[in-house]
Each structure stands twice: as C-alpha cells, then as structure tokens.
Length: 262
Image (cartoon, rainbow, N blue to C red):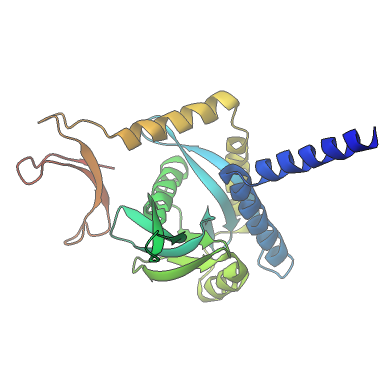
C-alpha cells in the first residue's frame, strides 16, 4: 500500500510539473509577476488601475488581447509580456524577431543553434494601442515590452517614440522614470471612468476567446490580395509622412502595388 501511495505521488508530481511547464502556464506566471510589480509601485505613489487580459474590440469586428494595462494620470501603460529563452534579436522594422537557443552538438562536434521566430512585439503592441484608441478615443499611450529573466536581449534596436523594452526585473524602475518625465494628462476622475469602461472587457467568455484565437490563426495564414491573388503581408512604412505606420501590402510587389491600411 505504501509503495502504491509513493507511485501515485510521483505521478502527480510529474503531471503537475508538465502542466506548469506549458507555454500558457509560463506566460501566466510572467503576467502575474508584472501585475505584482504594478501593485507594488501603486503604494509608492505611482497610482493607477491594473487590468489583465483585456479583449478590446477592433474596427474589423475582431478583438485585440492586451496582456496588462496600467491606467494612470500620466497615460495608459500598455504592457506586452514575453517569456522566451535564449538570445533575443529584433528591431521595430522587421515583422519577426528571433530567439536562439543552444541545441547541443552535431555528430561532428560542432555546436548547434536552434532559431525560433515570433511576431514583432512592438507591432503587436501597436495593434493593441490602435484598438484602445478606436474604443476610447485619442488617448495617450506608452508601449512597454517586458521580457522574463530566462532570456538575454542581445541585439534590440527600437527607435519608435513611446516604445520601451525591458526585463521584468527593471519594469518598476522604468515606469517610475517615465512617470517622472511625463506631464499629468488625466484627472483622477477621468482615470476612474476609463477603468470602469474597460473593466467589463476583462470578462471574455470562452467563445469570445476562441473567436480571438481563430482570427489570429486566419491572419497567420495570410489573406489574399483582391487584385492579383497574392498574399497580403503586414509591413511598416519606413519613409515619408507615414513612416512607422503599418499596412498590408501584396507579396507580389512591385508587380502588384495593392495596399490596405492596418
């Protein structure tokens, strides 16, 4: 009987360990750590309302899921949480960033490196901010991308205004720095009104979450160009008065110059 109890206990530990190691579980832990940071700075006088996992309606009828939002008199701190391992490379111009991990050694002794691509988090947070502005009006937003301690930001080049990249351990210091350098934009009453309007968006149903995931999947598959049948690719303008703005362009460019605003 005692042996059976030990075996059951070991199986339970193994199952719990496997559950806690899923990307979803790791992501939730990262978001919870950030939420703790925000609650902590609140008590140091940097007051605001913290909301997690907000499903904000977009113009096209889909939703944009914001990991964490800190609504303050200084503006909206829109926070995207990333929990990758390895070296991180990226900039605010390319669609994808790269995470590189040591992959052991090949049979001839040479080190192997595994590379994983993920969607540009600066662009991702821009989409969240655009949805917020569609829902609330022309608000003042600060974009912050937060990485966990399991990675090293090796070569990150971001020049966009009001966009910040940091480790979770540095988040409180960063927000305090931004706060002290930013003029007051909203009264306490306005902050509370924004909070009360956004609070219902945190209670998304299972169906709404499933629809959100389905929309993301469909976009990843790529929409067809209505002019030539090519694939629409999300791009960012690099020059001119629209520099920094995102748009969908045809994969057959320059033969096809069809574009659509994001």
